[in-house]
Length: 150
Image (tube, rainbow, N blue to C red; front, side, top):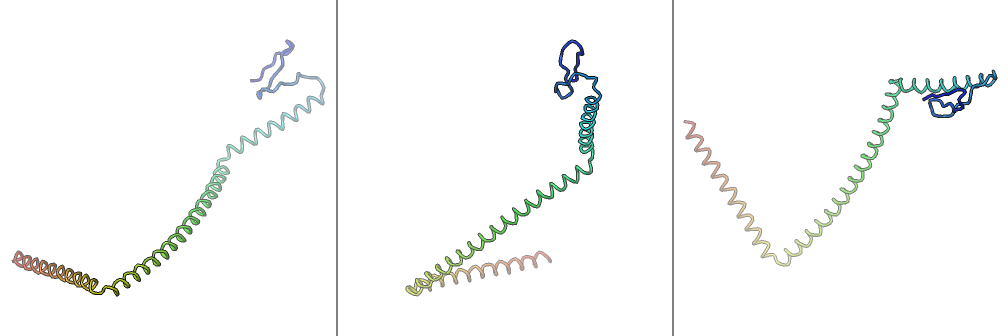
């Protein structure tokens, strides 16, 4: 984008679009301009060298990713600790409720023992019936397996 027209009166511009000072014959000004150009060129070369240094850029990226992973790990640990604390609280609340329900049930059973004894007897009878049926089916299956294995 460097443009110059010389004696036609137009302003010269550099590659950055900044107006350039018209040329002068003063050696001090020329030396200062050369020094400034060298400094700018050195900065540009240094910037390009940094971008071209893949190993250093990779190390920086690894360090960045490690930092992010550490943050994620810390957040996960905090979340896990909060979950454990919540679970402990829930267990304690459930234990208290279970104790209260047991006390109420025992109290009711003491008030009306005949009803609860009847229910308990029915449950025992049902359990015994289930066990007998399973035993008979197992025995019948064993007899059939013996018969078929002949």
